[in-house]
Length: 326
Image (cartoon, rainbow, N blue to C red; front, side, top):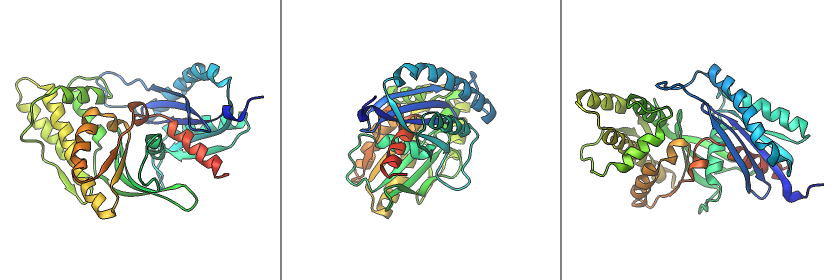
């Protein structure tokens, strides 16, 4: 008979590019955080949903083998899976049905409660782990990933659950798409974030004339940035990958700075939590933190393992629901 300290909640997230399963003890200790990226062909800009669904099913089998031994020492008391990209009506992607149905099966075989959440809530919750916010009941969260750039006002409701209000973001492409599109043009393998980030960190010169940005009341139009980069590349005799990488990253930082300085002042909230794969960038976290600090805005970036796709947030949300008695 296992003791209560060996009770765990399983989190599952099957996003567009990563299969993730995590286990968290009821005292919020990470037991394991397993994830496998979906294979993307060289020079490809992504995967079709049908391809991604097939790859998730294959990855689930591999992860199951990896965690089988670890699970023997624990008692599963709850399962939580992402069922959709965002916590809004009509949000849907086929890839999430894989994790959703695996979660239902797992909860059934272990005779424990099953809970549903969204990919965005999962990201934000995992980014909050271990963070000491001055006010955990009200803050701004930024979700920057391969397909999403949103700024959300987060309030804790009466029942203890977070409520989300979109207050800013991009009106066209996302930061992640800009980074990956530039990376593919520079002959990097998809996803390209780590290469662009490394280049930007290594480029030591200051860029005097950056790319033009378009920001109004917290909302950004980013497609113009890609057009400017294409024009610069077409005029270069020899492509300078580090220069182009830093040029793009500086533009991302300026967009986010303009948006957040406006929104923090408007809503009277001066703490920002960053989630999603793009927030794992060391260049962005360092330079954006410095710029926002001058406006007395405190930033909370997390470790890359919790910023990039994972299922830790799902498991944490499962624990919250257990504590609420749902």
